[in-house]
Amino acid sequence: MISGFIAIIATIAVYAGSKWCYKRTGKAFLTPLLIAPLILIVILACTHISYSTYNGGAKVLTSLLQPATVAFAIPLYKFFPVLKKHVREILSGVVVGSFMSIFSAACLAVLFGFNGSLLHSIMPYSVTTPIAMGVSQKIGGIPTVTAVFVIITGILGTIIGPLIIRIFRINSEIARGVLLGTSSHGAGTSKALEMSSISGAISSVCMVLAAIISFCASPIIATLF
Image 1 (spheres, one colour):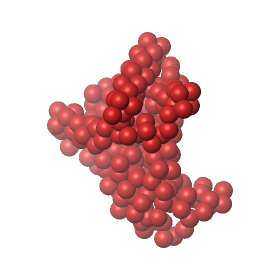
Image 2: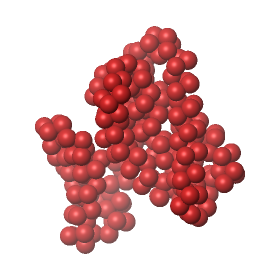
Image 3: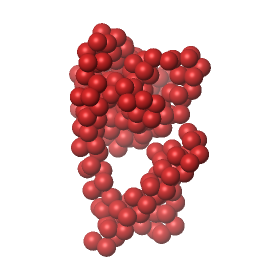
Image 4: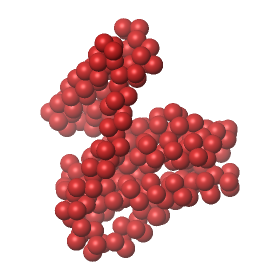
C-alpha cells in the first residue's frame, strides 16, 4: 500500500516537474512524454523497485487514460459547426493517413525481417494506447510492445509534426489538426491544442476516426502479411 502510494506521488511529481520545464523552455525534446519516463526509469533502477511493484500503484493513473481521451470530446462540441463544414477534408485525410500508417508499418516490418507477432505489434502504432493495445491483441501482436511504439510515435509526432508544419508553411488550422491527430494520437492532439482550440478539436476527431479505421482495417491488412 505504501509503495503504491509512493509510486503515484513520484509519477505525478516527475510529470509536473518535466511539464514545468517544457513550458518554461518550449523545447520539444523536453516534452514530458520523453523526460518523465526516463526519470522514472532512473528512479526505479536506483531504488531497486521492481516494475510490478511500481505498476501496482501507478496503474491507477493508467486507468485515467480512457476518461482523459473521452474528455477530448469537449472541444468537439464547441467547434461542431467547423467540423461539419470541413467533414470531407477531414475524412479523406484521416482515411488516407490511417491506411498509409498501417500499410507502411507492415512493409517496414517485412523489410527488416520481423517475425509475425512483432509485425502485428507495430501495425497499430499511430492510434491511442488503449485501442492500439486492443488491436494488437486482436491480430496476434504483443500489447506491451505496441504500447512502446505508440509512445515513441507520440513523442516523435510532437517533435517532427511542428517542424513539418513550419517547413511546408501549413497555416490551415484544419490541416494542422488532421496531421497531428491522425499521425500521433493523444500526444499530437495535445500539441494541436497548444496551437489553437480549433486544431485541437479537429485533431480529437481525427484521433478517434483513426482508431476506428485501425481497429477495422488492421486485421484485414494483417492477413496480407
